[in-house]
Length: 351
Image (cartoon, rainbow, N blue to C red; front, side, top):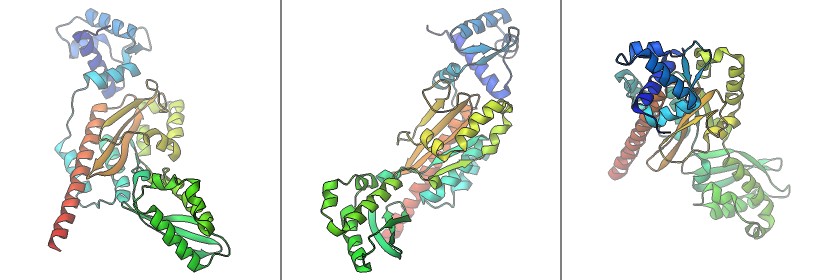
């Protein structure tokens, strides 16, 4: 059924009012505050029709209406007006990133904090997908007790927290030779390509085969999100919202944010483009709790993936503010990386 312009306007008013007040919206308040040229009875009929269409619900016969998850989805896609940030918010973003490094690992926590501070919701973030990082160098360093430290240098970072088992009779010279051979094989490959080396290739490594298999097993671990790649900021802010006076809602929310694996599952499968994604728990086929929404954006700049960031909060969240913040933070990051790259190019030209 095609929705009339008046129904759209009334639905927009109900969603905006409920987001701002968390109080069910009545036909009387709509007629008196927003549609002064329309009778309360007409508004009441339109509200009843929107309820039949599944966009509104009513807790009590004599009470006002509240939006359904379906209404929020329609609101986001059809009715929401473009927002803007205040000069104060824009200055905060600029100041927060003005002296930051373009080191992705150090950016993740800062970006999550900025998003949480500006939206007043809990923010979640996950670092860039490691599987596409190119291996620049790889080394095995003897540590004694039949173990070696695997150090992997990519174009983004240094990975050096993985110990592998080596044969007891393997000398330091043998380990150095194995390290050289394996490094040559993997140089220039992405982590995802390196972890998919076939058994036929392993067979060619003879005495180094066990070491090679250990290295591949370690590489597989690097392509999965690690705890330090998943960041949560402002978890306590969820309790500012009246929805979370209900203990059941609190349990649902805590079940998600208390597990970094669950956070990674929720936000780790987004597209690599800069775009806004909205998941409404009880409306979408998602693992978001039914009383929550998740709004995320995946950022890239200078050909570099900067990770996925977002906000998790009540379905009755201020989507306009959240989306505007995510868009402006993305622009700030893009400007930061572009400036850092320009500075690097200028230094290279002077050499």
